Length: 359
Image (tube, rainbow, N blue to C red; front, side):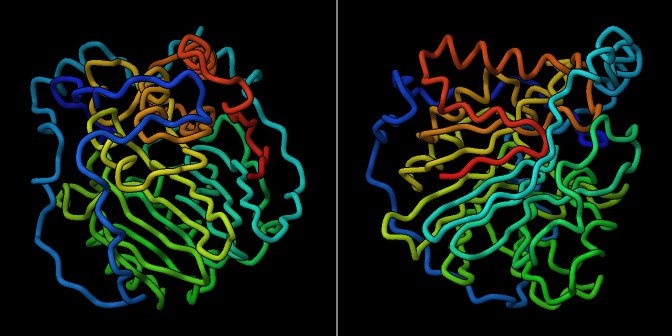
């Protein structure tokens, strides 16, 4: 598996062809035809039928036996000893959750792809993983940034896909079963078997609304697998959350887990005016193995420009050792790429684990 065995495909996805702006406060103009109108929100909690497989949504084919044999021969599963020496330097600064005023969107990084988003009066968790260890992976390098007992009541959870470092059953088990879950197509059955009663599953470009917040499910360059027999049986993607009640609605894009490719430009066209993009920057080495499913830091900056986001917050690093790059390398590379792109330093929200910022 690649997030547990996240594996790559053959070649990098094509770039979107957008021109980088000189500042993130001036997102690129959308190319091509005007964006389609937003989809009509789906009913919450509806039961739906889906195809048996979503393999036709893959950007590139999954690797074969030859690629697995090469990975085993090279042994590049985890950082070398020199790459692990930076663990004490990983940014970890837990602090109390800030107060959130009406019309304000607050984000707190709990680690990996887990965020606490407070928007429109709701508290939303993204891909919550509060466990110390996940299947097939060494224990966390850094603790969770916010203790579970310190969380406000959780109104909703969004899940990007079913890999173990994004869909953590022990963490979900800690939630009340009436918590609203927003999940990719095909994943509701897994949630309902665990007692959750308010599960809404969406296809790409579909949406649902809860408490004045709109949840749009958007594509990603990734895949899904949780057992030996369920490859691509459920969908994968990211989420755009919009506070509809604010005088000037604010949008946060949570990319989930993704390689770089053409979908970012399309997401920006359909969802203009994204205020903040939460983008993955880690678990990218060796590149030949992970290129098509995990963006590297430079590609994450390109993705931010493609979606037209005004700000970027890096994630998916500093928590689990999922791949071979040195543990502190993603932060250095994303800062360098941001500077080379001529973007305002204040628009790169490179938070420590446990850190918060507000729009």
